[in-house]
Amino acid sequence: MPGYAKPVYFIFLVIATFGVAGGVLAYKRGRSIVLWCLLSMIFPIFLLVIWFQKPIKEVPGGFRQCAGCKEWIGWDAAVCKYCNASQPPA
Image 1 (cartoon, rainbow, N blue to C red):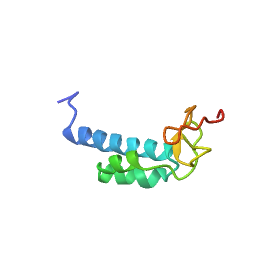
Image 2: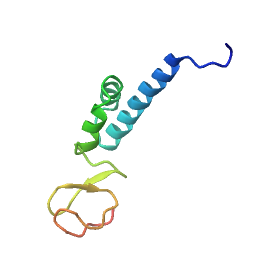
Image 3: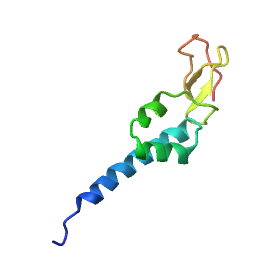
Image 4: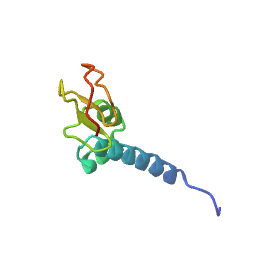
């Protein structure tokens, strides 16, 4: 039938969506994009793993270290949520 989408295309679309989401989350945390993209495509549970991982380096627009306690906070945070220290502007 013309215009009929095969279920294989839908499955590929879902798998690709998991991979892209894993790659974006890895990029925002300074991690390997390709590795996390592939892991998320094969095992979607790795999306939760990367979601809760702390970054390994400062990512402009994503995360930075607190000036007081060196904990990772959001890039635009004015006050650290861990030690309540005010942060210099990004």
